[in-house]
Image (cartoon, rainbow over all chains, first blue to last red; front, side, top):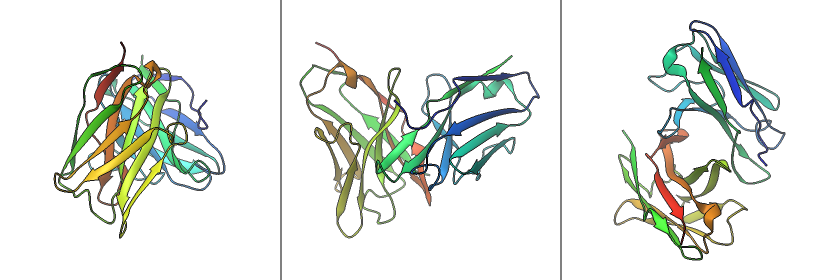
Length: 110
Length: 121
């Protein structure tokens, strides 16, 4: 059973804003920074956000991240059809002494 | 640009040892600011961090509690690669295995394409 939970699904129409939550605890998200990953079907996860709210070079600015307490969020503004994918959050856990991943959220563009 | 490439057996019999290797280009396995990870993904377990190896004056390893008794991650400096060995495998170890490293100062940034390992007789 994962210590970091996400809603299993989210959806929106093109152009809409979609937000995905990531709920953890004091030993992981509460103390450490959060990464977000996008996984397109049949491919490896790709880093989307690091250090809670930083975008790597090449990631569109419609993707944004935030963190508050033991939770984090990923927002996709101006949803596009190519954003249809699975999204995962991840953080280091000081108690487990390892990385923990969220349960994943499948985003569907209606 | 860092690139990682896994190679593995594809099929392993139950109770045997799973061995997967990750070749690194664009970075050094011996860098004293990098850490090299193994992560697996299966429908039943999702994304699961297995462990890492890193060099800080000496080689260090951290392993997930779920596999600690049967895992080993080792660097090979002569080939600039690192490997995963998982002993006494069961069908529960069937998964896509990814090696994951840094991109500059960003940890867990670069993922290999993954290698599928099936445990079956």
